[in-house]
Image 1 (spheres, helix red, strand yellow):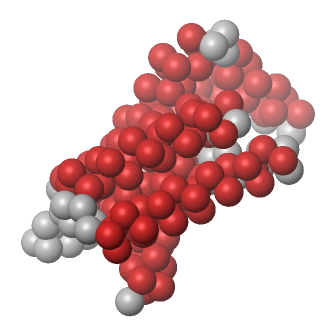
Image 2 (image 1 turned 180 degrees about the horizontal axis):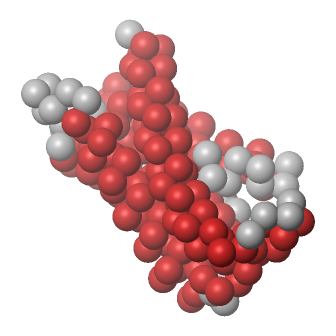
Length: 176
């Protein structure tokens, strides 16, 4: 790794760490957004997967040391998606990579909802009952709560994918 890449990697890690500390200071409103930034930082760092792996490990470490609880759960998702994009980087893929990114985000969100959250005592039943309470407060039928729960995960995956793509374009534009 050359000196310029090392300096750029240090800047990326410092930026991510500073944003995590600001996020914790103001009550963690950015906990779901910052891992998307980590994805964009990994993808725009280099074309070499080894260099991207090094920056990904740094982002994971900083996320676990300085991130909020939500950020500690979602930073690995951002890292996995970032490494997936770097691994699948191919000019012939075009728009297909966005669809693949959505699928990976959706799969990882399902894993978080059904495996990671229960480890920390937040069960699916609690999450769905919270959705049902929301429906009841608006006078809507609670039968749709489970469907809405899964649709929400799907919509979140789509939003994360488009946000990641936009951040990648923004960072690439700034770098040039």
